[in-house]
Length: 141
Ligand SMILES: [Zn+2]
Image (tube, rainbow, N blue to C red; front, side, top):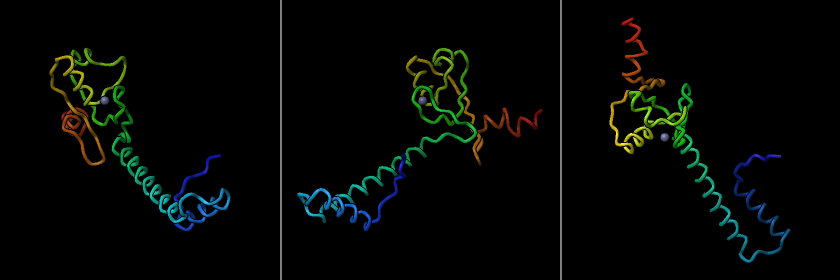
């Protein structure tokens, strides 16, 4: 059975600690110190949860492009296109690389090339995408 973790109020925390003291006997430190210690750990836990949520937001993928880099695991948000002759020298077997890992692998191989970056967000659209897939491309067709 999974019990959802919810933060205890100060009163609940104190009641739990007083119950624990009744069950196992007097602690070597005062119950007030135990409560202060538990509150400190509760703050530490809340900070760790907030940091974890921040990191998850920072590494979220696009809703319409839910991919992660096969090399580093970061969200792959920017579709990066490089000439095939360069890609074939650095590509993983059938895998996908983020822009940073493509750059790292090119540099490691002593290669340099130009790239096109494609991005379509809720309000932002890259020029490369607009030229090849967007309204501009449709207008030219
Ligand atoms: Zn990567």
